[in-house]
Amino acid sequence: MGALSLFPTTNTGQTPPLPPRDLLSFLLPYKKAQSWREREREGEMGYAKVLLGVLLVTALAATSTAETKLKCSKAGATCTALIDYVSPNNTNIAAIQSLFQVKKFRNVLGANNFPTSTPSYRNVTAKEKIRIPFTCLCANGTGVSNRKPVYKVQKGDIMYHIAANVFSGLVSSQQIADVNRLPDASLINPGQELWIPLPCSCDEVNGAKVVHYGMVVDKGNTVEAIAEQYGTTPATLLTLNNMTDPKQLLAGQVLDIPLPACSSNVNSSSLDYPFLQLANGTYVYTAYNCVKCKCDSANNYTLQCEPSGLKPTNWTTCPAMQCEGADSLSIGNKTSSGCNQTSCVYSGFTSQAILTSLVTESICPAPSAAWKIGFQGLGWNFFLLISIQLIFLSLHLSQ
Image (cartoon, rainbow, N blue to C red):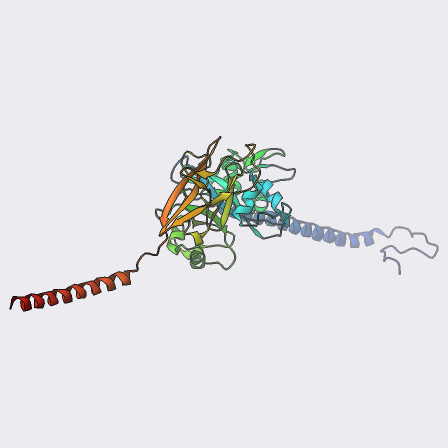
C-alpha cells in the first residue's frame, strides 16, 4: 500500500485540481496545531539539554572542589612520598612511569615491591593500584610534588578531564590551575605544559620519621580498618587528614597514611640524603645504581643495603664498598663475637666514593622483667638466710 495522501490521484495518475478554498480553510488550523506541537516538543528538548548541561557543570564543579591538601610545616623541606594511581584503563608500568615522570623504572618496582626482573611492559589492568614514588616539597604550609609530573595538553583536553581521568582524581582542576597561575581553568591550549601538584607531606608524626603514603580509599573501607592495617591509630589518621568524624571518609578519597620508615646511618652530606627514607616492604637503588637498599619490619625497621651487582650510571665501575678497620667486611656483611655483632653498613655516597661505617650491637636477648624480679627475690632470701646462719655461727663460736 502506498503512502496516504490528502490529495489522492485520479485513475489517470494525475493530481486533480486544487480543492476549494473552504477545504483549505478547514485544513489550515490542523497544520498550525501540528507546527505548534512540534515547536513545543523542540522547546522541551532544548530545555532538557540546557538542564542537563547545568547539572553536568554543577557535578563537575562539585567534584573539582574535593581537594586533598596535606599539612607540611617545614618550608623548603623535601622528602620521598608515595601515592596510589588507579589507572582508568589497561596500560603498563612503562606508560605509568612516563606519565608521572619517575626518573628510574626500578624506583617504580621498588615502591611496589615488584621483583627486579619485572619487565617494563608488565600489564596493569584498569582499576589496579600502582604506588608512585615522587619528591615532595613543603611550601606555604602544604606539601606538593616538586615540579613534577608535567603534563602536555593534548588536542581536545579540558582541565576536568586531565584532573579526573588522566590523573584519576588525585588532584582537582582548581589545584592545577592555581599552581600554574591560570586565571581561567577552562582556557588551556594543545602543547601547553601543566605542573600536576600531587598531595604529600614531609612532617614527622608523633615524633617519628615516616613515609607519607597517599592511599586511594576503596569502597567499604573504614578509618578503623585502615588504621589497623597500617599500624597507626584512627585518631592519627583523622588529624593528618583534617577530619573530625570517621564517617567523612569517602571512596576514591586520597588518605594520608604515615608508614614507619626504616632507620639508617646515611650521612647528611650524602647525595641521597634525605631521600633514602624507605617504608616497610619497599626497596631502592642508589649510589648511581651500585647499592640496593630495602626496608623490612622483620629487621627491626633498620635499612639493609648491599652491592647491587648492576652497572653504574655515572661511574665506570662501582667504588670500593669495604669498611675501614675491617678489610674483610663490605656493605651488607656481618661478623659476630660473643654477644656482639658488627655490621658494615651503607652511609651514603659522594661524586667519587661510597661511604661506609661499622656498627656494633648486642644480639644476646636481654633478661625479661620477670626474670629480674625473680632474681631479686631470690637474692634477698638468699642473703637473709646466709646472714642468719652467720649470726648463729658467731654465737656458737663465742661460747
